[in-house]
Image 1 (cartoon, rainbow, N blue to C red):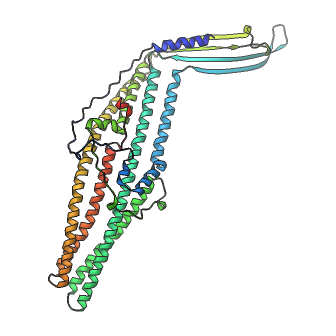
Image 2 (cartoon, rainbow, N blue to C red):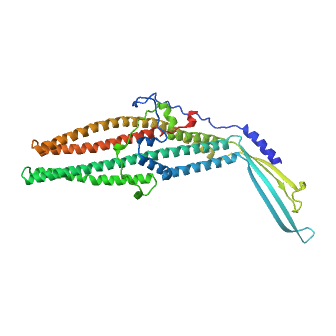
Image 3 (spheres, helix red, strand yellow):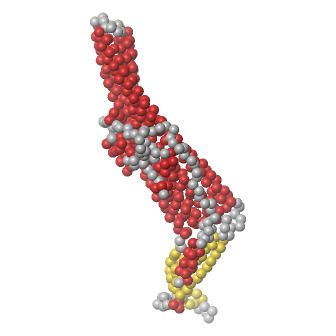
Length: 464
């Protein structure tokens, strides 16, 4: 049929059509040659995709798996992927011919010149086709923009997933830290209460004063007052963990485990130049930049004529019995061109808007790159210094325990007064609590470093 030949001809014209848009060039942002903070010596080792398993916690693995299937932020990100895919399909539709089938059957009664009326029938099945010749690449540019936006939505989902995984790990570690600190506070309270009981017996025997007893009562009351805030923070951490794993608060609990049972595996990142292909947020920023560049091409093409072709063919007859005979075949061909002349500056404004959006996203991409590099530097120094902090706090806790043991023995022997015992007692309580906080800070720094390094994600397209 003529319509099919027209469509084939249009396809060949389309292949030769031109694009008026600017060619996309990858922004050249030179990364530093090496990290400022030196990582652990040895071969480079980027995080694995299941990086959280390196902490050796079955509970953490379970929470991560639950979050991957039930977290609401991840569900919303996946829904945005589906929306972007649908937008891409919509944008790709004008690149193909539109086909429609129409069938009509009419029965009409009308007056005739000789007087009276005549009744007639008309049957008409028709196939129509329309196609817009994309001479100036507007439709292709819109499709390229939608395709880039669809990629950006996938990178966004990966970024959200990485943030959720890091959030689950950090919140779980915080819950363990608060449980450890609560246990330390309760042990300290029991120890301080034991000392108070002994002082009261000595006061009864006249071996100590009421002032000594009152000072120890102050220590007991202070330690006792530190327990309710820890319980409150622990409940709040569990509630936050419940939100991350997509459960109601009463279902989530951490009844066992300790920071002491966790491992913080070493990470040895490669060169800074390799980082950009491992950060989904950087890939997302560039995909959005590519989409904006394509929108400039579409806005520029809008200044030029729009050329469309339509074709139709079928049969028309007053009698249904002989409808599909060659004598009743009908067809039509039409071509039209529309050239915008005056639209009140709308086309120019749209073009300037597209260019402005590109400049905005270019700045956003530059910021994403330098922020990614800064995140790794911050995480590396945090890992280094928190490890040093844990080691120093461990030494301080050991020294405080030794000093308290000596003071307690000498107090019983009567060679020191109660003030010395109270001083060493307070120092021991503080050292234990500070050690638990330092361990949590180190584990959190490890999680942050895994996140800053992209969590094991790789942009395969960037590797080509």
